[in-house]
Length: 363
Image 1 (cartoon, rainbow, N blue to C red):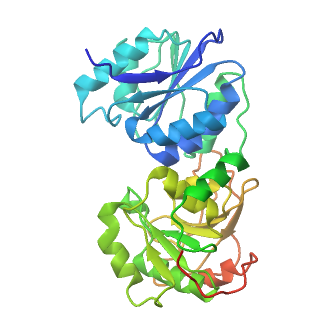
Image 2: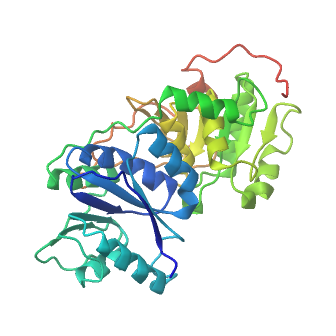
Image 3: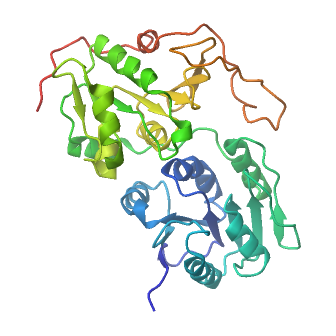
């Protein structure tokens, strides 16, 4: 019978095994790397990921960002393939893990609570809905409304402190990825205007003005995305100056995308996987948060540290939205308070030195 999991773990390690089940977006995986890294002194930390991440996991393993993983044949969506999930539960149970962490994934949470997915100790947190009732060996953690805070609480329950800074690839790997990237210019900006969740995407007008600002700052623009976004890409770039834009939407592998991001001077993106990958390769990011950004937050990623620029008022028709700042459980708790006036992306870009404008020449 074909196995549902492909497991990669170093042999001969006597540390207890910890298995981590998480949401299956690239951003979700990259956000969890500080937690997995913090747990490594006491555990062999094994992240369960979909097969679409095969290239990324091999790169992370090579670079030492992870030490093992379990790869499923499909997406970990319980509602889409219950039978396959039961097979995954059976194979994970055979690992006899000391600890099983489940973040989100209520179907798998209930499977663990009912004994279909077994480990000596289970910690479950669901930021988006109900949770099974706790019992001996099955602990339920309340969601804090902020994923980083939830991960820190998971780490605290296991006796470790989770750093706030994200994981960065080593310079050697970044240089290798950059050399393999299909970059049309030696100096350029990357714009990633779409995510897998359209509710997170800023408006077309925001990215159109961003493209204009980048070109005005002397940087040609490379557009990235999935093949399904090609029509949107053509619309976004319509009327842009000839020779200053290139669409690689649907034309890059994941390693090639990482290389493009590593070679970019700056990245303009939504809150999604591209934003987190850009941070991992050390490239500054201007990221739009929320469906009506730039009325909420614009985040400039420098790793480490991370600085945030708050934007109030309206921008290109985006409604005014402010962070309430809430208590410890609020989703914005722990973030620097937004401050300052609304600014055009061009003004934000000018805060960081940019190369002298040159005529973009295709390689």
